[in-house]
Image (cartoon, rainbow, N blue to C red; front, top):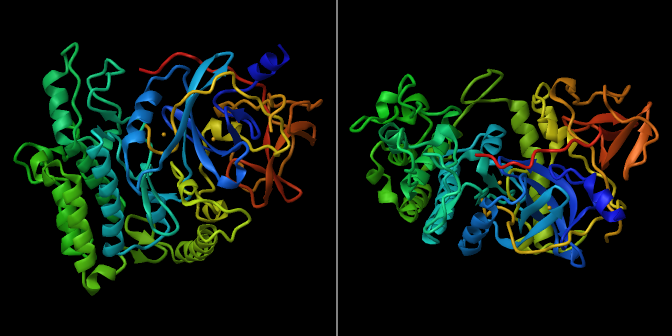
Length: 500
């Protein structure tokens, strides 16, 4: 009974460091997507194997995790994180499926480009790897259905990983929603998907059958956004400029007309991926797209190594700050060195290659982010809620451990007694926290006695220290005596209903 009562205090949306989910111990919070929350975990008894990614469902009984696991387990690609395990975490509010995958240490594609000045050759190589990941997905009988820069990670050694298969589908899989459209991101919808919506808007049972051509179109939108710092015209028929996507239409304006630093080969391949006619997108063959991108990268002359963006103090598309580029170069040098040490087994512990892939974007050196003009942004309330506690925190073992979702291939991580976690701050009680000193408690914040595991008493309030992270603190943390803290709030229960 004691274990059950304590476990009840753990918010499934924000697991504390040290908590055990089956054979996996939570080491840190990674991020949250539409269907799941991602954690960095280690395997109990095999800590030397290195970090893994654990994706835990936001809603109990979410059937998408089983579908994601099926797809991930069948994709064989060096550009898709591998699925290691799946299971169900029993919580008083329900059974939450989870997946365990490779931990990929890298940045999202757009973050990577925003901090650097890539050339056409570099872009071609990155896109080719993304196309290879899609080819492996399609070969397994699946479609990703949510290809975009935020779901593409770039590792320090330049390897690309396609992540978050939560919206994925495969031949024979059951339809989980009654919606006409499958999950996805509107800016990446193909023209034929919009045409289908217009034709069958009032049909009670029909569903749009997303295809490899839809994935390739989304890759084209990603490529356009990568080299232009802005999206192509909307494919939504009601939007201004969408007429270019009509049947027989010209498609978007060539990127090279707006950015002459783009090589003709890259320009032509982006336009081919963005063709209004699905058949013209390599006939839906991602492998052929990958080959064309690789050949263009290999055959590019000196023009292929010209940086794509201007450098200066201007603020706008296709401009890069010299200070940001310098910081990124310094960070890259450190990241590459650390990565090489891990690859060679010279780090503090040997981490096999299979444990180095991480899904959903992760930035190793968050201090650079703070320096690069993100001071005014507020993270979601969950970011404030999720905190890192000291390793000595006790853990809870779930009653059931069955196979489920992993890291980035299936769809968006020594135990005693459990540990509590803090609940998210309400949106209107949050304030920007970058570099701010820790002062008086927030309205509603827990006050002494601070009895939860990992809580410390400071300035009249209860706080969680973010491990051994030194100042400057990340965006949602507060500084006190050169250490970083997050406020502790009463646990807030989340709804257990499923999204549509």
